[in-house]
Length: 327
Image (spheres, rainbow, N blue to C red):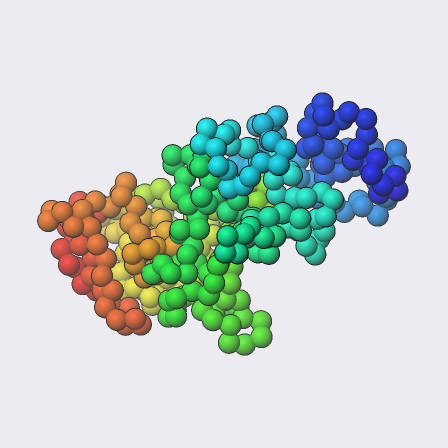
């Protein structure tokens, strides 16, 4: 930034249009970035900056350009005011004075240490500022910290390594625990959420996939199985293993359906919660829009043993009664 502070602070531009206008002067389109370079505010070596603005207009996005003028100076996050307007400004996730490529969360507080809120160290702590215990969570949103808690029966390994040590479908280099150099045993929110473009900017700014996901994930019942339909899952889990019933003897029947009878399969989402399950092993938490209690009123999954891959289900699904149906 050859003109230092003036690169961002130019007259009343932030007061009038909000800080995103200044941010996107450099982090937006090539046209805007070139104009900044020609005016001497941005060095020529910054030509490789990604276009964040293009991400913020995708179908699924953080509402940086949608909700403006409600960010409060010094606001506390997680939000403490029930009727506060939900918003997502650049400065909610980035401290523009301290941020760097090596320390993207520097200057932001959100990590709870006893009774104190310390600087953020891990990405999920940043996400929890709005997606955990905020008093103004939408009615259809859930506390993500409760879903990822390491005391749950199962969870994707975001806060800590997973509890289920026999996930037979994992592709290399993913592993339940880090046993060898190069093993990946921990994920971050941006492992699943982020740009749908391979060379897109880092971070969950926007995506064309529902849930602001990096890859497609069909969550509706009755869709045909394909690598594309469940690409999010198949990025880490071997499709051949899943359809080969290595982890569950009826996996392929549930996912593919019985095509001889014209019955489509169901989504991974019908039986699994991709964040975590407080009740069951292996992320099992039934989608009750599809899975209903059995005639006896029970809706449950029971595992038999830690690694035996045996269990039973009591439920009703697609008109089929499961009464302690074992596998």
